[in-house]
Image (cartoon, rainbow, N blue to C red; front, side, top):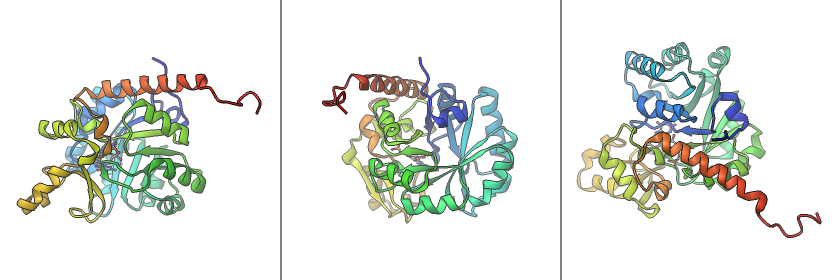
Length: 303
Ligand SMILES: Cc1cc2nc3c(=O)[nH]c(=O)nc-3n(C[C@H](O)[C@H](O)[C@H](O)COP(=O)(O)O)c2cc1C
């Protein structure tokens, strides 16, 4: 199948500009390897591994299974030994870093010295402009309806707004799991996309089968955004969040017992191997793009 080339995919040397989103307690080795082997970019958040030894072992296992690029999400919030984590990742050939919490400037120089790139996740033009002053190489625009910590501005508004303001390379995240949605993100000016929720319902996601089945069963109207459990807006499966009403102790087991998902549950209709999800998305994107020259535009020839 043809590649989908963007500046991002060329820079990374990947076949499709599709990132398997870093997801707390979801993205472990199997998912990372499956996405990268399918031609996307597999990623995981560093807090998934509680010790440096566990992180080192996980990266060793990933490296024994794929030589393709992978990415990690670094939390530079002060809660984790990010310098040591970063050194281990660089040692294992990781050259692409997301930051979600904390100050990206704390890792930018070290990553650049190793020839790597840092992309910071933002939900607004204001955050994007602040990230730009930190010297990051690119941004992830998290739009409304994303799984995990969500934004509230729809991507068709947010992506052009951030591009206009910063001119930085941009990946889009939130509600994207079909190739037509990838094509739409590219049309908006994004260089690629992150796919989270759809990959929760993958064979390789490191979560309980009941969570995967709940994602498949849910409709967008079953997703509720709440600041209740973390202080920030997170999209949760409504039924899962409501369990806290009768069992308040579950609040401390958010992410593990209380399940997050975004509006793209709409397109998660079965539990599939992650590689199949990535390849189907790429195929659907190419088919969508191929349709465009045939769209009749009145007056095109007279313009
Ligand atoms: C269960 C879950 C956990 C997540 N954990 C993280 C995380 O640890 N770090 C991070 O940067 N993003 C996290 N995200 C957000 C994803 O990286 C991604 O931006 C988002 O899922 C994209 O939107 P989508 O779910 O609509 O595809 C998480 C998302 C989900 C669904």
